[in-house]
Amino acid sequence: MIESSLGLIVEGLLSTLLVATIFYCISVNRKLERLRDEQKGMHQFIRELSLATAKADEAIQGLRATVQDSGEELASQIDKGRNMNRLLKGEIESAEQTISKLVIMIGHGETSQHARSSTVPQNTNDKVVEAASDLRNTMLGFEDLDLDLDAPPQVPQSTEDLMVDAKGII
Image (cartoon, rainbow, N blue to C red; front, side, top):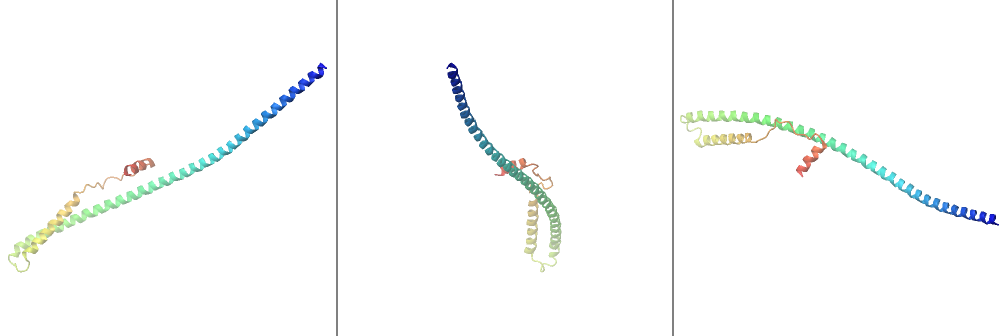
């Protein structure tokens, strides 16, 4: 009888351990399911992060291309400005020579005017001298501009330089 009650106790103990094992397995299974769900969420997050990184890389490449194009356009505009500056300097020199010739001709005209005073009225000579003087003063005003068009253009070398320049403008 002791043997049968000892067998019964062992079987009861084994049944209890088996039930505890089943509950533990159910608990572990639930934790594994949550872990798998979180893993799926992490995969989705990683895909979205990868996509955002690719878009950011594209945007950076686009900005670099824009900076490059803008730099080239700026250099082109500076070259055009330098050419225009040279052309204007030549025109100013030509105009100054013409003014000098006009002044000389007017000076000669004044001396010969006494001989033929009826052909050119005095106020016409005064108006030409005054216009020539105004034109010379206007052209000299262009020389007063402090433009350094012979200096090399300042083109941003990197995206960071462009951003710093943009912050300074804004």
